Length: 473
Image (cartoon, rainbow, N blue to C red; front, side, top):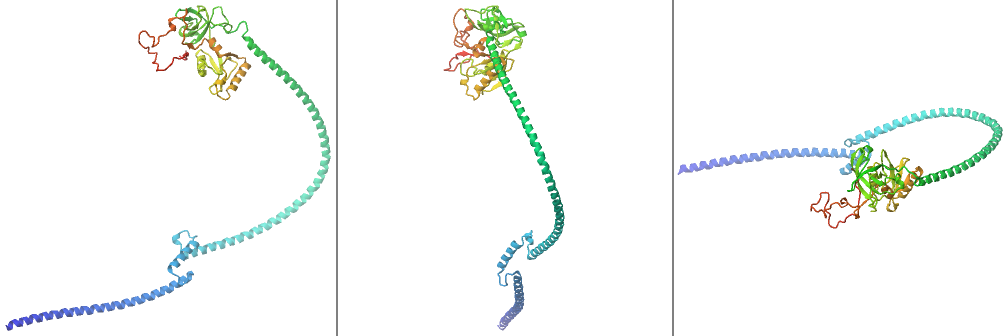
Protein backbone atom coordinates (compact mmCIF):
# COMPACT_ATOMS: atom_id res chain seq x y z
CA UNK A 1 0.00 0.00 0.00
CA UNK A 2 2.87 2.32 0.92
CA UNK A 3 4.61 1.41 -2.30
CA UNK A 4 1.64 2.42 -4.34
CA UNK A 5 1.43 5.83 -2.68
CA UNK A 6 5.09 6.44 -3.48
CA UNK A 7 4.44 5.65 -7.08
CA UNK A 8 1.53 8.13 -7.20
CA UNK A 9 3.66 10.76 -5.60
CA UNK A 10 6.39 10.21 -8.17
CA UNK A 11 3.93 10.54 -11.03
CA UNK A 12 2.53 13.72 -9.54
CA UNK A 13 6.06 15.09 -9.10
CA UNK A 14 6.93 14.29 -12.70
CA UNK A 15 3.78 16.03 -13.95
CA UNK A 16 4.52 19.06 -11.76
CA UNK A 17 8.06 19.32 -13.07
CA UNK A 18 6.85 18.99 -16.63
CA UNK A 19 4.24 21.72 -16.17
CA UNK A 20 6.85 23.96 -14.53
CA UNK A 21 9.17 23.51 -17.43
CA UNK A 22 6.36 24.37 -19.88
CA UNK A 23 5.42 27.45 -17.87
CA UNK A 24 9.06 28.54 -17.76
CA UNK A 25 9.41 28.12 -21.52
CA UNK A 26 6.16 30.04 -22.20
CA UNK A 27 7.27 32.81 -19.82
CA UNK A 28 10.62 33.04 -21.58
CA UNK A 29 9.07 33.15 -24.99
CA UNK A 30 6.60 35.84 -23.87
CA UNK A 31 9.36 37.99 -22.40
CA UNK A 32 11.47 37.51 -25.51
CA UNK A 33 8.57 38.53 -27.84
CA UNK A 34 7.85 41.66 -25.80
CA UNK A 35 11.48 42.65 -25.90
CA UNK A 36 11.66 42.30 -29.73
CA UNK A 37 8.38 44.16 -30.19
CA UNK A 38 9.59 46.99 -27.98
CA UNK A 39 12.80 47.29 -29.95
CA UNK A 40 10.87 47.24 -33.26
CA UNK A 41 8.48 49.90 -32.03
CA UNK A 42 11.36 52.08 -30.93
CA UNK A 43 13.05 51.70 -34.32
CA UNK A 44 9.77 52.37 -36.18
CA UNK A 45 9.21 55.52 -34.16
CA UNK A 46 12.71 56.67 -35.00
CA UNK A 47 12.11 56.01 -38.72
CA UNK A 48 8.79 57.84 -38.55
CA UNK A 49 10.43 60.85 -37.00
CA UNK A 50 13.10 60.79 -39.71
CA UNK A 51 10.49 60.52 -42.47
CA UNK A 52 8.53 63.39 -40.91
CA UNK A 53 11.62 65.52 -40.96
CA UNK A 54 12.27 64.55 -44.59
CA UNK A 55 8.67 65.36 -45.57
CA UNK A 56 8.87 68.68 -43.82
CA UNK A 57 12.10 69.42 -45.67
CA UNK A 58 10.58 68.32 -48.99
CA UNK A 59 7.50 70.43 -48.33
CA UNK A 60 9.71 73.43 -47.70
CA UNK A 61 11.62 72.62 -50.91
CA UNK A 62 8.34 72.22 -52.81
CA UNK A 63 7.14 75.55 -51.46
CA UNK A 64 10.36 77.16 -52.62
CA UNK A 65 9.93 75.58 -56.09
CA UNK A 66 6.30 76.74 -56.26
CA UNK A 67 7.39 80.27 -55.37
CA UNK A 68 10.02 80.05 -58.12
CA UNK A 69 7.28 78.91 -60.51
CA UNK A 70 5.17 81.87 -59.42
CA UNK A 71 2.17 79.88 -58.15
CA UNK A 72 2.54 80.40 -54.35
CA UNK A 73 3.64 78.04 -51.58
CA UNK A 74 0.12 77.01 -50.57
CA UNK A 75 -1.17 76.22 -54.08
CA UNK A 76 -2.50 72.66 -54.47
CA UNK A 77 -0.47 70.20 -56.51
CA UNK A 78 -3.32 69.69 -59.02
CA UNK A 79 -3.51 73.46 -59.61
CA UNK A 80 0.27 73.60 -59.99
CA UNK A 81 0.13 70.76 -62.52
CA UNK A 82 -2.68 72.47 -64.46
CA UNK A 83 -0.71 75.75 -64.52
CA UNK A 84 2.38 73.90 -65.75
CA UNK A 85 0.43 72.20 -68.56
CA UNK A 86 -0.99 75.56 -69.71
CA UNK A 87 2.51 77.09 -69.63
CA UNK A 88 3.86 74.20 -71.70
CA UNK A 89 0.99 74.61 -74.17
CA UNK A 90 1.30 78.40 -74.48
CA UNK A 91 5.04 78.91 -74.08
CA UNK A 92 6.56 75.59 -75.14
CA UNK A 93 5.04 75.37 -78.65
CA UNK A 94 8.45 76.05 -80.16
CA UNK A 95 9.70 72.74 -78.73
CA UNK A 96 8.65 70.20 -81.35
CA UNK A 97 8.92 67.08 -79.18
CA UNK A 98 6.19 67.15 -76.51
CA UNK A 99 8.10 64.60 -74.44
CA UNK A 100 10.98 67.09 -74.15
CA UNK A 101 8.83 70.06 -73.06
CA UNK A 102 10.26 70.90 -69.61
CA UNK A 103 10.70 74.29 -68.02
CA UNK A 104 14.42 74.04 -68.57
CA UNK A 105 14.06 73.01 -72.20
CA UNK A 106 11.52 75.77 -72.82
CA UNK A 107 13.78 78.33 -71.19
CA UNK A 108 16.71 77.12 -73.27
CA UNK A 109 14.61 77.38 -76.44
CA UNK A 110 13.34 80.86 -75.54
CA UNK A 111 16.88 81.95 -74.71
CA UNK A 112 18.12 80.60 -78.06
CA UNK A 113 15.32 82.39 -79.92
CA UNK A 114 16.18 85.56 -78.04
CA UNK A 115 19.85 85.22 -79.01
CA UNK A 116 18.88 84.50 -82.65
CA UNK A 117 16.59 87.54 -82.68
CA UNK A 118 19.38 89.66 -81.25
CA UNK A 119 21.76 88.37 -83.94
CA UNK A 120 19.20 89.11 -86.66
CA UNK A 121 18.63 92.56 -85.24
CA UNK A 122 22.37 93.21 -85.24
CA UNK A 123 22.65 92.00 -88.83
CA UNK A 124 19.65 94.14 -89.83
CA UNK A 125 21.30 97.19 -88.29
CA UNK A 126 24.49 96.38 -90.14
CA UNK A 127 22.59 95.91 -93.42
CA UNK A 128 20.70 99.13 -92.82
CA UNK A 129 23.95 101.03 -92.33
CA UNK A 130 25.33 99.53 -95.55
CA UNK A 131 22.13 100.39 -97.42
CA UNK A 132 22.16 103.95 -96.08
CA UNK A 133 25.74 104.27 -97.28
CA UNK A 134 24.79 102.88 -100.71
CA UNK A 135 21.73 105.17 -100.85
CA UNK A 136 23.87 108.19 -100.10
CA UNK A 137 26.22 107.22 -102.93
CA UNK A 138 23.23 106.72 -105.26
CA UNK A 139 21.75 110.08 -104.32
CA UNK A 140 25.07 111.75 -105.06
CA UNK A 141 25.28 110.00 -108.43
CA UNK A 142 21.64 110.80 -109.20
CA UNK A 143 22.18 114.47 -108.44
CA UNK A 144 25.07 114.48 -110.90
CA UNK A 145 22.87 112.87 -113.54
CA UNK A 146 20.02 115.32 -112.88
CA UNK A 147 22.38 118.20 -113.35
CA UNK A 148 23.60 116.65 -116.61
CA UNK A 149 20.02 116.02 -117.78
CA UNK A 150 19.09 119.60 -116.90
CA UNK A 151 21.90 120.85 -119.11
CA UNK A 152 20.70 118.60 -121.89
CA UNK A 153 17.09 119.81 -121.39
CA UNK A 154 18.17 123.41 -121.83
CA UNK A 155 20.06 122.48 -124.96
CA UNK A 156 17.00 120.55 -126.22
CA UNK A 157 14.73 123.57 -125.61
CA UNK A 158 17.06 125.67 -127.68
CA UNK A 159 17.01 123.03 -130.43
CA UNK A 160 13.20 122.83 -130.16
CA UNK A 161 12.85 126.54 -130.73
CA UNK A 162 15.02 126.24 -133.82
CA UNK A 163 13.12 123.17 -135.07
CA UNK A 164 9.77 124.87 -134.40
CA UNK A 165 10.77 127.70 -136.62
CA UNK A 166 11.91 125.27 -139.28
CA UNK A 167 8.67 123.21 -138.88
CA UNK A 168 6.60 126.33 -139.56
CA UNK A 169 8.39 126.83 -142.81
CA UNK A 170 8.09 123.11 -143.73
CA UNK A 171 4.39 123.15 -142.86
CA UNK A 172 3.73 125.92 -145.32
CA UNK A 173 5.44 123.84 -147.99
CA UNK A 174 3.41 120.70 -146.98
CA UNK A 175 0.13 122.60 -147.13
CA UNK A 176 0.96 123.67 -150.66
CA UNK A 177 1.87 120.06 -151.53
CA UNK A 178 -1.39 118.89 -149.90
CA UNK A 179 -3.40 121.28 -152.02
CA UNK A 180 -1.67 119.97 -155.14
CA UNK A 181 -2.30 116.34 -154.08
CA UNK A 182 -5.96 117.09 -153.32
CA UNK A 183 -6.40 118.55 -156.78
CA UNK A 184 -4.71 115.48 -158.29
CA UNK A 185 -6.91 113.18 -156.15
CA UNK A 186 -10.07 114.96 -157.30
CA UNK A 187 -9.00 114.56 -160.91
CA UNK A 188 -8.30 110.82 -160.37
CA UNK A 189 -11.62 110.36 -158.54
CA UNK A 190 -13.48 111.88 -161.45
CA UNK A 191 -11.64 109.51 -163.79
CA UNK A 192 -12.41 106.48 -161.57
CA UNK A 193 -16.08 107.41 -161.31
CA UNK A 194 -16.24 107.61 -165.06
CA UNK A 195 -14.59 104.17 -165.32
CA UNK A 196 -16.97 102.73 -162.69
CA UNK A 197 -19.92 104.09 -164.62
CA UNK A 198 -18.54 102.47 -167.77
CA UNK A 199 -17.99 99.19 -165.88
CA UNK A 200 -21.56 99.29 -164.55
CA UNK A 201 -22.79 99.80 -168.09
CA UNK A 202 -20.61 96.91 -169.31
CA UNK A 203 -21.88 94.76 -166.42
CA UNK A 204 -25.47 95.52 -167.32
CA UNK A 205 -24.74 94.63 -170.94
CA UNK A 206 -23.07 91.37 -169.90
CA UNK A 207 -25.96 90.55 -167.56
CA UNK A 208 -28.39 91.15 -170.39
CA UNK A 209 -26.32 88.97 -172.71
CA UNK A 210 -26.07 86.27 -170.03
CA UNK A 211 -29.84 86.32 -169.63
CA UNK A 212 -30.27 86.12 -173.35
CA UNK A 213 -27.82 83.21 -173.54
CA UNK A 214 -29.64 81.44 -170.70
CA UNK A 215 -32.94 81.92 -172.49
CA UNK A 216 -31.32 80.66 -175.66
CA UNK A 217 -29.99 77.55 -173.88
CA UNK A 218 -33.42 76.92 -172.35
CA UNK A 219 -35.03 77.40 -175.74
CA UNK A 220 -32.54 74.96 -177.27
CA UNK A 221 -33.38 72.43 -174.54
CA UNK A 222 -37.10 72.92 -175.16
CA UNK A 223 -36.61 72.66 -178.91
CA UNK A 224 -34.60 69.43 -178.55
CA UNK A 225 -37.86 67.52 -178.31
CA UNK A 226 -39.06 69.04 -181.60
CA UNK A 227 -35.91 68.20 -183.57
CA UNK A 228 -36.59 65.99 -186.58
CA UNK A 229 -34.08 63.39 -185.39
CA UNK A 230 -32.70 62.79 -181.88
CA UNK A 231 -29.94 60.57 -180.66
CA UNK A 232 -32.40 58.35 -178.75
CA UNK A 233 -31.97 55.56 -181.32
CA UNK A 234 -32.65 51.88 -180.94
CA UNK A 235 -30.22 49.74 -178.95
CA UNK A 236 -31.12 46.51 -180.79
CA UNK A 237 -33.92 44.62 -182.47
CA UNK A 238 -36.20 41.62 -182.01
CA UNK A 239 -34.66 38.57 -183.71
CA UNK A 240 -37.55 36.17 -183.05
CA UNK A 241 -40.93 36.08 -181.30
CA UNK A 242 -42.46 33.02 -179.71
CA UNK A 243 -46.18 32.74 -179.18
CA UNK A 244 -45.72 31.95 -175.45
CA UNK A 245 -44.53 35.49 -174.74
CA UNK A 246 -40.81 34.84 -175.21
CA UNK A 247 -38.64 36.85 -177.61
CA UNK A 248 -35.00 36.83 -178.65
CA UNK A 249 -32.94 39.97 -179.27
CA UNK A 250 -29.61 40.60 -181.05
CA UNK A 251 -27.80 41.73 -177.89
CA UNK A 252 -25.72 39.55 -175.59
CA UNK A 253 -22.64 39.16 -173.41
CA UNK A 254 -20.36 40.99 -175.88
CA UNK A 255 -22.62 44.03 -175.52
CA UNK A 256 -22.26 43.99 -171.68
CA UNK A 257 -25.92 43.03 -171.37
CA UNK A 258 -27.19 41.64 -168.06
CA UNK A 259 -30.26 39.79 -166.90
CA UNK A 260 -33.30 41.82 -165.83
CA UNK A 261 -32.43 44.78 -168.08
CA UNK A 262 -35.71 46.12 -169.49
CA UNK A 263 -36.31 47.51 -173.00
CA UNK A 264 -39.12 49.41 -174.66
CA UNK A 265 -40.23 47.98 -178.04
CA UNK A 266 -41.00 50.17 -181.09
CA UNK A 267 -42.02 49.37 -184.65
CA UNK A 268 -39.22 48.43 -187.01
CA UNK A 269 -39.61 51.61 -189.02
CA UNK A 270 -39.17 53.85 -185.94
CA UNK A 271 -35.66 55.29 -185.54
CA UNK A 272 -36.29 57.99 -182.94
CA UNK A 273 -37.64 56.54 -179.68
CA UNK A 274 -38.07 59.97 -178.11
CA UNK A 275 -40.58 60.97 -180.80
CA UNK A 276 -42.51 57.67 -181.05
CA UNK A 277 -45.07 55.68 -179.13
CA UNK A 278 -43.87 52.34 -177.82
CA UNK A 279 -45.79 49.15 -178.51
CA UNK A 280 -44.61 47.14 -175.48
CA UNK A 281 -41.76 46.25 -173.16
CA UNK A 282 -39.56 43.23 -172.48
CA UNK A 283 -37.21 42.02 -169.71
CA UNK A 284 -34.02 40.02 -170.35
CA UNK A 285 -34.20 36.59 -168.71
CA UNK A 286 -31.24 34.70 -170.17
CA UNK A 287 -27.99 35.47 -172.02
CA UNK A 288 -27.54 32.94 -174.84
CA UNK A 289 -24.47 34.25 -176.65
CA UNK A 290 -22.33 37.21 -177.54
CA UNK A 291 -25.18 38.81 -179.47
CA UNK A 292 -28.23 36.83 -178.43
CA UNK A 293 -30.43 36.94 -175.37
CA UNK A 294 -33.84 35.64 -174.34
CA UNK A 295 -36.43 37.99 -172.90
CA UNK A 296 -40.03 37.83 -171.75
CA UNK A 297 -42.76 40.22 -172.82
CA UNK A 298 -43.82 42.25 -169.80
CA UNK A 299 -46.25 44.56 -171.62
CA UNK A 300 -47.75 44.66 -175.09
CA UNK A 301 -50.76 45.85 -177.06
CA UNK A 302 -52.89 43.00 -178.43
CA UNK A 303 -53.91 45.10 -181.42
CA UNK A 304 -50.26 45.93 -182.20
CA UNK A 305 -48.24 42.87 -181.14
CA UNK A 306 -44.48 42.68 -180.89
CA UNK A 307 -43.01 41.30 -184.13
CA UNK A 308 -39.68 40.14 -185.44
CA UNK A 309 -37.57 43.12 -186.55
CA UNK A 310 -39.04 45.56 -184.05
CA UNK A 311 -36.53 47.87 -182.42
CA UNK A 312 -35.73 47.76 -178.70
CA UNK A 313 -34.62 50.77 -176.68
CA UNK A 314 -33.59 51.32 -173.05
CA UNK A 315 -33.65 54.67 -171.29
CA UNK A 316 -30.76 53.47 -169.06
CA UNK A 317 -28.78 50.73 -170.80
CA UNK A 318 -26.80 51.69 -173.91
CA UNK A 319 -24.39 49.53 -175.76
CA UNK A 320 -20.81 50.44 -174.91
CA UNK A 321 -21.55 53.36 -172.56
CA UNK A 322 -23.15 54.16 -169.25
CA UNK A 323 -25.80 56.86 -169.07
CA UNK A 324 -25.76 59.16 -166.05
CA UNK A 325 -28.93 60.11 -164.14
CA UNK A 326 -30.00 62.33 -161.27
CA UNK A 327 -33.12 61.72 -159.18
CA UNK A 328 -35.15 64.33 -157.34
CA UNK A 329 -38.54 64.74 -155.75
CA UNK A 330 -40.77 61.96 -154.41
CA UNK A 331 -39.86 58.82 -156.38
CA UNK A 332 -42.94 56.60 -155.97
CA UNK A 333 -43.28 53.75 -158.48
CA UNK A 334 -46.60 52.28 -157.39
CA UNK A 335 -48.44 55.20 -155.77
CA UNK A 336 -48.40 53.72 -152.27
CA UNK A 337 -47.12 56.97 -150.72
CA UNK A 338 -43.74 55.42 -149.87
CA UNK A 339 -40.47 56.60 -151.38
CA UNK A 340 -38.89 54.17 -153.90
CA UNK A 341 -35.68 56.19 -154.26
CA UNK A 342 -33.45 53.28 -153.26
CA UNK A 343 -35.35 50.99 -155.58
CA UNK A 344 -34.93 53.46 -158.47
CA UNK A 345 -31.18 53.66 -157.86
CA UNK A 346 -30.88 49.88 -157.86
CA UNK A 347 -32.97 49.67 -161.04
CA UNK A 348 -30.72 52.17 -162.86
CA UNK A 349 -27.55 50.40 -161.72
CA UNK A 350 -29.08 47.03 -162.61
CA UNK A 351 -29.61 48.30 -166.17
CA UNK A 352 -26.03 49.57 -166.47
CA UNK A 353 -26.66 53.24 -165.66
CA UNK A 354 -24.98 55.55 -163.16
CA UNK A 355 -26.72 57.71 -160.54
CA UNK A 356 -24.75 60.95 -160.21
CA UNK A 357 -27.00 62.63 -157.62
CA UNK A 358 -30.23 61.97 -155.73
CA UNK A 359 -32.36 63.42 -152.95
CA UNK A 360 -31.92 61.27 -149.81
CA UNK A 361 -34.50 60.56 -147.09
CA UNK A 362 -33.33 63.59 -145.07
CA UNK A 363 -33.92 65.99 -147.96
CA UNK A 364 -30.21 66.45 -148.74
CA UNK A 365 -28.54 66.09 -152.13
CA UNK A 366 -26.17 63.13 -152.27
CA UNK A 367 -23.67 63.34 -155.12
CA UNK A 368 -23.41 66.07 -157.76
CA UNK A 369 -25.02 66.85 -161.11
CA UNK A 370 -22.32 67.30 -163.77
CA UNK A 371 -22.09 67.97 -167.48
CA UNK A 372 -22.04 64.17 -167.98
CA UNK A 373 -25.49 63.81 -166.41
CA UNK A 374 -27.94 62.98 -169.23
CA UNK A 375 -31.32 63.09 -167.46
CA UNK A 376 -32.79 64.57 -164.29
CA UNK A 377 -35.71 62.32 -163.31
CA UNK A 378 -38.34 64.42 -161.54
CA UNK A 379 -40.68 62.74 -159.08
CA UNK A 380 -43.76 64.08 -157.32
CA UNK A 381 -43.85 67.30 -155.35
CA UNK A 382 -42.38 67.19 -151.86
CA UNK A 383 -45.63 67.63 -149.94
CA UNK A 384 -45.21 64.02 -148.79
CA UNK A 385 -41.77 64.70 -147.36
CA UNK A 386 -41.56 66.48 -144.00
CA UNK A 387 -37.81 67.12 -144.03
CA UNK A 388 -36.72 70.75 -143.66
CA UNK A 389 -34.73 72.06 -146.61
CA UNK A 390 -36.03 69.42 -149.06
CA UNK A 391 -37.74 71.93 -151.34
CA UNK A 392 -34.60 74.08 -151.51
CA UNK A 393 -32.48 71.03 -152.34
CA UNK A 394 -34.93 70.10 -155.10
CA UNK A 395 -34.88 73.65 -156.51
CA UNK A 396 -31.07 73.62 -156.45
CA UNK A 397 -31.02 70.39 -158.47
CA UNK A 398 -33.39 71.92 -161.05
CA UNK A 399 -31.27 75.08 -161.25
CA UNK A 400 -28.04 73.10 -161.70
CA UNK A 401 -29.57 70.86 -164.37
CA UNK A 402 -30.84 73.88 -166.34
CA UNK A 403 -27.43 75.58 -166.15
CA UNK A 404 -25.69 72.44 -167.44
CA UNK A 405 -28.27 71.64 -170.13
CA UNK A 406 -29.36 68.40 -168.45
CA UNK A 407 -32.72 67.21 -169.79
CA UNK A 408 -35.50 66.86 -167.21
CA UNK A 409 -38.04 64.06 -167.59
CA UNK A 410 -40.88 63.01 -165.33
CA UNK A 411 -40.91 59.73 -163.45
CA UNK A 412 -43.72 58.23 -165.62
CA UNK A 413 -41.77 59.17 -168.77
CA UNK A 414 -38.64 57.59 -167.34
CA UNK A 415 -40.43 54.33 -166.43
CA UNK A 416 -42.24 54.23 -169.74
CA UNK A 417 -39.12 54.81 -171.85
CA UNK A 418 -37.14 52.14 -170.02
CA UNK A 419 -40.00 49.64 -170.30
CA UNK A 420 -40.62 49.25 -166.59
CA UNK A 421 -44.11 49.06 -165.15
CA UNK A 422 -45.41 47.70 -161.82
CA UNK A 423 -47.20 44.54 -162.82
CA UNK A 424 -50.95 44.46 -162.27
CA UNK A 425 -52.41 41.27 -160.88
CA UNK A 426 -55.49 41.89 -163.02
CA UNK A 427 -55.09 40.15 -166.40
CA UNK A 428 -57.09 41.28 -169.37
CA UNK A 429 -58.65 38.49 -171.41
CA UNK A 430 -58.32 38.56 -175.17
CA UNK A 431 -56.47 37.28 -178.16
CA UNK A 432 -53.11 38.19 -176.60
CA UNK A 433 -53.64 36.16 -173.38
CA UNK A 434 -51.54 33.04 -172.86
CA UNK A 435 -51.10 30.38 -170.18
CA UNK A 436 -48.07 32.29 -168.85
CA UNK A 437 -50.45 35.04 -167.75
CA UNK A 438 -52.06 32.67 -165.23
CA UNK A 439 -49.32 31.10 -163.06
CA UNK A 440 -50.31 28.32 -160.70
CA UNK A 441 -51.29 29.28 -157.15
CA UNK A 442 -52.05 27.15 -154.10
CA UNK A 443 -55.74 27.75 -154.72
CA UNK A 444 -55.89 26.74 -158.43
CA UNK A 445 -53.14 24.09 -158.62
CA UNK A 446 -55.03 21.11 -160.15
CA UNK A 447 -52.44 18.69 -158.83
CA UNK A 448 -53.55 19.40 -155.29
CA UNK A 449 -49.92 20.02 -154.23
CA UNK A 450 -48.60 23.33 -152.98
CA UNK A 451 -45.52 24.54 -154.76
CA UNK A 452 -42.51 25.29 -152.55
CA UNK A 453 -42.36 28.84 -153.96
CA UNK A 454 -45.64 29.80 -152.27
CA UNK A 455 -46.23 30.36 -148.57
CA UNK A 456 -49.41 29.85 -146.62
CA UNK A 457 -51.33 33.09 -146.44
CA UNK A 458 -52.41 33.96 -142.86
CA UNK A 459 -56.09 34.47 -142.22
CA UNK A 460 -57.23 37.94 -143.14
CA UNK A 461 -54.29 38.70 -145.47
CA UNK A 462 -55.36 40.43 -148.66
CA UNK A 463 -53.84 40.13 -152.11
CA UNK A 464 -51.59 43.07 -153.01
CA UNK A 465 -52.87 45.34 -155.75
CA UNK A 466 -49.65 45.16 -157.73
CA UNK A 467 -46.34 43.32 -157.92
CA UNK A 468 -42.93 44.99 -157.84
CA UNK A 469 -40.05 44.00 -160.05
CA UNK A 470 -37.27 41.92 -158.47
CA UNK A 471 -33.98 43.83 -158.34
CA UNK A 472 -30.49 42.36 -158.27
CA UNK A 473 -29.07 39.11 -159.55
